[in-house]
Image 1: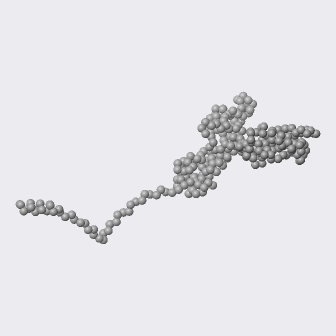
Image 2: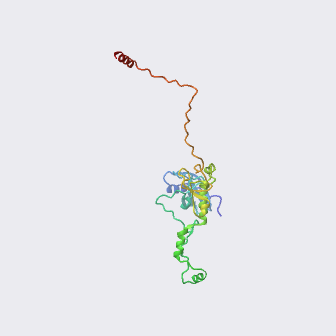
Length: 282
């Protein structure tokens, strides 16, 4: 059991502990003595302030001890430890948990675990029993055993010919993620005049996702090219509003209650003189 009272000789060995810390640290980075703690019988750890840049709140811990009935204190170990208010690096997180959507760039490879819950084996026909096995004969009595080529062809037709396909769990996770980003609870959908289920720009999906999702094909919509919930909506709905017609000019108004005076141009004086002279000469 550890003693709560530090050993007197070990507690007094402050200079010995300081010399050990100064030997391990860079010159001038060992600060004042912060205290001593008893780690056991005749075992004491001295703490010194660390003035190393970047190690705020850290301290040098030097452990000294002495043998039973001995009066000579010896050095055990010297280590730099964080204090209660030390500046620490963030806790290490595996890359699989640090990865965020959009982090994958050109040339990057994202390995998928063999036991990924989002995936399940596809249909390849490898599980079909050999033609001459007992199991094949038993199945043959009940129904014809399809050939691998027929199974592969059917799998390709229904989209199951890949090594792994999306599992039910992976389908639900994707649906929850899409609905959170482009679903009915988003501010855009709350202010929309109508939902995507009645929009002409909606491209339906195939399979079970068709019942709840589609792809937006409106280039002016914020969800263009994204999978959207049928309950989502935006101001770019195809039936949101009718485009206003261009204004027509007002028809002319004819006032028939008054007469418009039109001024007549007088004949120029030179022309009148020439006419008179011509007539006199004749």
